[in-house]
Length: 147
Image (tube, rainbow, N blue to C red):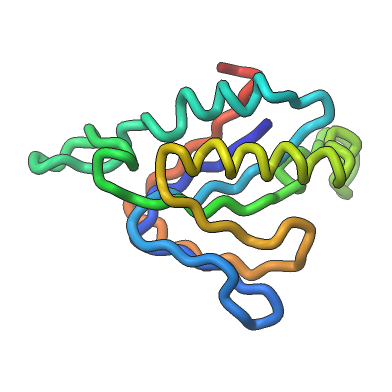
């Protein structure tokens, strides 16, 4: 499972011109589910993401987590994160999990993350426009297989 975690002042997602998820200060998380991902991958991400100390304290140091600042999370499914661009010019999506299973794992991740912080989402499988007010910019790519 691959997560692109961005520190944001705000973020929102639209489907067909309508806002379906919106947050203020917190984390924008783009989540890609790979073939073979399991509950264990979700738990590895959950042991890391809510606790990442990437928000500034009173001294300007990245020392606070999203929980410490009472922040929120916007989680967007993004299967393109699992693409391989090793060969040729067209990305290969052979590493992407099948949509039904990917949706189950995505929804499970959202449910579990909501135990830590308020969570908004996009619409799984939809064409979405994501607006990210990344501050810093601060962005981390976290792969559950590397944790």
